Image (cartoon, rainbow, N blue to C red; front, side):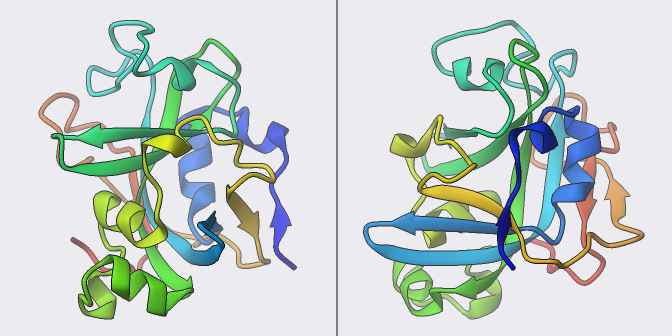
Length: 189
């Protein structure tokens, strides 16, 4: 079925969209190769959240987060690896959902090469790992998730009825906010 999500789907607040992303497919058409995976773990970020990149207002780095929902916000974390976020909300709201992990589906051979032949369970079980596996990098910042090189599609798999909910990880501020959502069977980094 692989139906792209429409713009209105993304205009809701990040903590609402985040658990609904679980089970959707993240698809990347990079350098003529299609790789995809089922989203298994996400974290929501709102503008009044001290852990959000938009907490101190709009900058050149986070400008995409202030645009319309349904775009990709990509940033380099610690100068080492890229992280991909789904921009949510209305234009100007400055919110997004970090995609923390996917279960690889298409393009496994390419993902293995991009990840230096790591075991399959380690191909995309972290935000930097999934970007490397899918080929997502700085040039994809601002990509339209509705019909662009990177898309999110609904293949009919429903989100889990009871996602695991807990505090976000890898941050120092706002850690206690329970906006990390995981599919119950998702591998944890």
